[in-house]
Length: 79
Image (cartoon, rainbow, N blue to C red):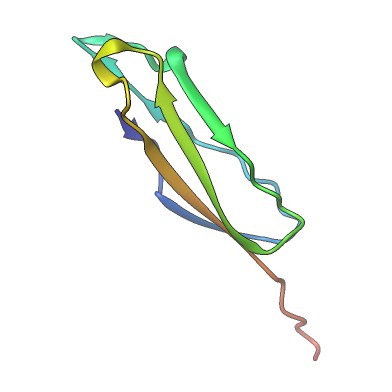
């Protein structure tokens, strides 16, 4: 049960975040389609947001993976 891509991501306020997801292999079979993603990122408000991944599978029951998305203010370049 592994995340695809970085575990910590930084985006600017207003930028869209596209999740790379995760992959789950159980007993040699790809069951990534059973991943449940809890994603509550507000790209209009600066802050640290967590994406939680779980999977509906007896082998991985209770196992969670997390990704952190930091939404940061855009600095004024002319100020």
